[in-house]
Image 1 (cartoon, helix red, strand yellow):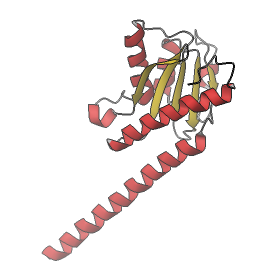
Image 2 (spheres, rainbow, N blue to C red):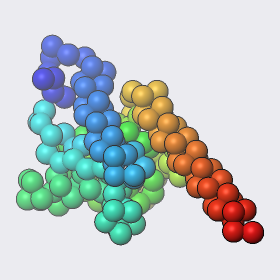
Image 3 (tube, rainbow, N blue to C red):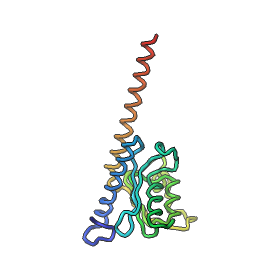
Length: 178
């Protein structure tokens, strides 16, 4: 298994390896009818935290994959700070998650697909570049982006088709009762 410091593997190979793990977690979110986003926190070549989107299931709007993974990692290392850790997430972080990344002192964020509407690493702003922040985060996007994007697109396409079928069924029931 490659690690972030494995001299036998390039940084790109390591990033793709860990991102594949995050994509597997995104599939778990999808299986629970949540938006398929997964995240892991890696430190010293080991996963110390993991999570996937679950705001619907948990009735918690803060239960994004990144937050879940950070909470899990902090609990596992018994510290609210995660220096020298890398967060791998399948979708560009939002402002809430970017703030949590800074506060937890994660060193590096690697993400897959961009999020044009609410991503704040590159899409809507460059959050980690703001001078008012007391911690600098290195960010890299586009790792296994096509896989992450396809997973998200397929999920939303299925949701749209499901919604359309439900509308058609409701319309048919209404026509039957008239």
